[in-house]
Image (tube, rainbow, N blue to C red):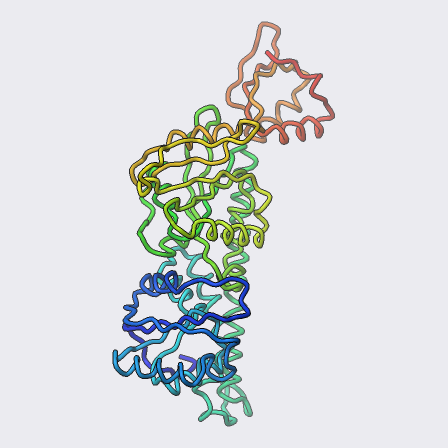
Length: 429
């Protein structure tokens, strides 16, 4: 709508360049999988190496000729760069290649636009797209870089380019306000869960590690799951009953990926809060992936960026059905606490071990007791009910309140402090 570009299509050429000054190098395999997830048909992969990107075309003249020959030979409709391109580089490449050019951010945005299902997810994707688009408005409008008059429209003297920028700013502000409202509603839901002492367990991990398959297996849900990158975009919450703990809320979240554009992390900040404010993270790892250690490091980087690196974490090594010698098991640290669970979400092997590990880790800070409260402890009783911590109540022969309570230990201590009481004043029934 805002600028003219060549028509796009499914036949794609992938370009991956290694730079000598990069701290880490990686192959084009993941980006090819990204392209396929977006619905593209990669017919060729062009690789190369350079000291640094070319300012005008990103690649050198020789590599550009090679790409153009392949585009013409394969009749490709889009060229996908596994890198971040500047607006001028995209424009210059399209003028030479005569087809659509997308960088890594543009491709991921395209996938996100396909996957978003909820109102919030669609707003977040549109916000990221508009912010990305706002840096690329210059292209296509060179023939309209003249002032236009108008009555009741733009006002005299505003160019078409300025109009588009203004319309983008208005739309971006509108989306940000709506997302703030959705974020406030999410915060209220989280506070409500905290008041009712329901722990939250959040699934995190590299994209395509099997989070949604595990989520469906353990909760009996039917969340969309597929063997592709970013199959899940919107967070899904379900209640899960854990023995000795009771109900917990399990959250399935968007998968992470290396070089995830910063603006996408920022746009999905409200969604990712489900991880940052969880009581326990289940870091799902594809145990059969040869890059699993690197993937775990990238997930750790994103968790640190969203402020979730201090949340207690249980590693879940999934897809052991692809490992010939692996068996379902729990690995423990020197104190006997669960640190890793090995399972197969596809076959259902090891799910009970996972529930056992969750129960052990959450039970550490859960206060479960039967309290005998005299009638003049009515304020404490009311506060426990207000917090949703009372599971049952009865009276003894002395007319005392006998309460079965269950809540996080820290919340119990806070309630006692607000009531002006200490633990030694409370009698267990």
